[in-house]
Length: 175
Ligand code: AR6
Image (cartoon, rainbow, N blue to C red; front, side):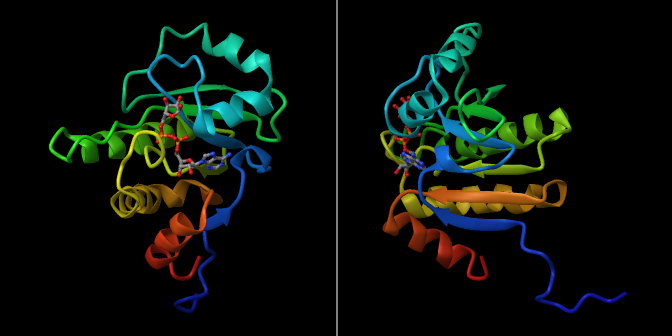
């Protein structure tokens, strides 16, 4: 059967709100290399998941920038958390773009290898404390989401504020 252009199911969507409330198989954490918690979305995820999450994170030596680590979600509605570490923004000449791509790809690789993760929600990695320019970071996020959408039923770009929602809507007009 032919599928009319424009009627394909939308895999990538934008949700404005708190990622810790999302009922998906896995949410992504914008962590730091220590994997010992922090502020921003990392702090919110640890608060919502409970102390068991930090205990599991402590079993890992850490996570280099661009890599990712999977844990359980504990008290979160999401069954899993995939922690990744985005780059700290310098001036763009420190390989930040490739490191941010690597962080998104590492998450997708872990999720695909797991076999039981079909729905996945990302915060806007590196765009808070780490200072990555919002437009450029969202462009990379959407690029890597599109690269991987065939393997998932739902990929959510979870944004926390209006400015970030506008940036994603410009990139994903149909979402
Ligand atoms: N749900 C969805 N998005 C959120 C939430 C939330 N509950 N809270 C914040 N954001 P940031 P980074 C958005 O700073 O820049 C931590 O201390 C926020 O508006 O959390 O990668 C880590 O431990 C922003 O758009 O992460 C690291 O040390 C985005 O999430 C460092 O911050 C990312 O902001 C990582 O910095």
